[in-house]
Length: 192
Image 1 (cartoon, rainbow, N blue to C red):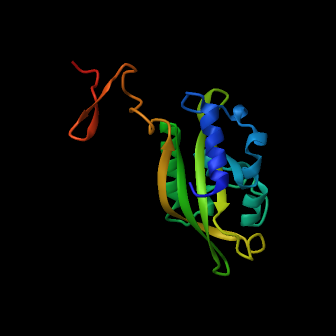
Image 2 (tube, rainbow, N blue to C red):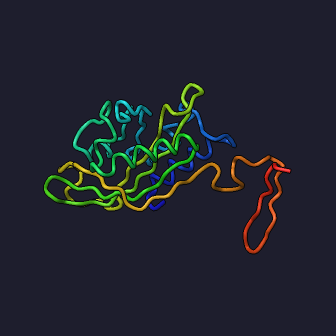
């Protein structure tokens, strides 16, 4: 993660998980992420309505030229990126992992800006697949930022992060002991 807002939001999300797969939406403390709050947003996980914004920080709203609450997230992307983003959001919710990605954004005038996107799933009322928290942060601040709204987002390089990526795969027995073999870490499964 390159942008400070992404680092702050991810660190808070990871801390609030406290050993669980996902933190609860109610456990997210805006005061704890105040330095990155203007770049932060929360989405409803609702594919039928294209994952609408529940709330969005001031800089995210300024990037698109107005209030985002209630607006769908997927139509902000170029047509070819929409299905990919939707599939990745489902994978994130299914696997309890996050996503960090480079994003290229353009205005109607042809101006471009590089952004960093962070998306992290949350539990809401004890259930997954209901909310996502994210950050969308400009890597530089061109003179036109906030004056000329961004119209289309294009997905760049991306990687998944979070639960299950910092240790043994989550489907292993808790007592599985790793061993080294030919430079690889091997976890014996439960099959006899």
